[in-house]
Image (tube, rainbow, N blue to C red; front, side, top):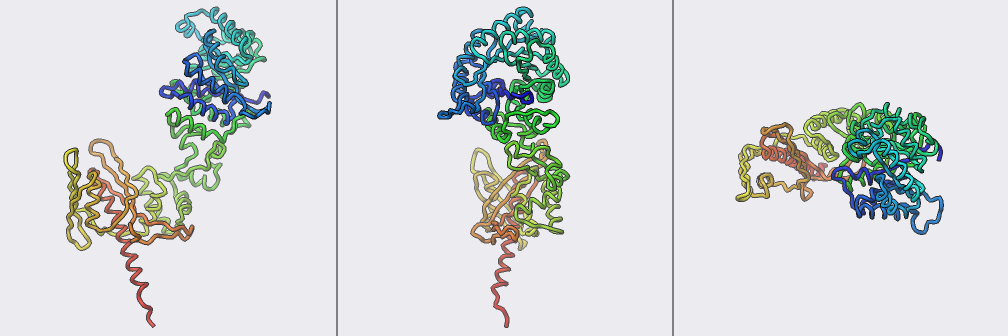
Length: 548
């Protein structure tokens, strides 16, 4: 393998599973392992076989089913990942690891022993000479079982470099083919870690016979930076996890290292065997199985990684994606970038999105739509396509209030039926009072309104949230509805030719959330009524006979 190739060692199933609450079943582990093989990782650390009988069986099954070519495939060059089992530097652990992985086409035993002063003194209770002896003995024992042996000096980031050179040299003499250098507690900075790797490459006896690996943790948010610094200093294996999961703050993220090497190829001049178009799919699989959501602003795989809301950014993206994206979303398995419409969005982004929805607005119409959009964006955090459609419909259906709320009283709780009494001021100037029973106070109030206005409709959407903090919080409600029985004609877009059912949106705000709900519902009903009246007038006009 050429010296410009970086092996990707994935430890999602071992170190990643150690995240609190991230326990995986053996079936889930197997499915993730298959996904990692499709992704193209070079080594899968499938688990810690000595930890439990279930862990042993899970690793063994992955070795059999993922660590070998599919049945019927006889191609000797068919690429399967190395299957690795972790073992402490004890004969019992090494035996368990070998028992679990030996069925794989390419098995690897990964054994470790701490080398930092604090770990040797307080955890191992061993002096440096004893550590060297045990490393020498246990690596040799692992080598007697398996040709491919990896050794890790745990807490190398806080170990004395001169002692590391000695320990690693003895591990190589005993048969280690990979030397993994872990920053176990995420303590080092990129400069320090890069210098540590460079020193190991320069001063460790026999280093030319082994691959240097890096394994970093994210306690200070430096895991990816440290791993890349180690790679630049000569490491040619990176130990990583999908989504960066792992103990405490997590491990180096596979997707970040791989995409950094790919995107900045002129800087690193290195390559991996990863099929990056599989990244998003495997990321979601791991998130779903572990129950650990990916934070929206997570690099590469977060929901916002290829999303743009700022108007300046959206305008640039619409002109040329490279203005604000250094990677194409397709390279990580996404279909397209996402322009998120919100209060920071500009006129250009709104116009393009409306065109995609079939509304071609220009000039004053676009100006009015943009003003209404900004007003809505100040009230509602996320603007959906349905919001935009209702917004355009609202512009076309601007009306004064036909019915207005003059009074409201509700009764609800665990005793009795939810009841609402509504008093509306109608178009004739008269007061209309109606009471109704519902499944809750809002449902009862809406039924009372329906009894007064007599306009059958279907409620499509009801959203409620607080816009201020505290017990006196202002509540906001947005609703969307459509008429039943075709009483309002459907609208056909001249741009797309698509026929759309008319929808009508309403907004209400009040410190009393039931009052806000009725205000929003009335706003939408008034628009529906106005649209129906216009359609009736239109029908009456066109039905008149033409004069001779």
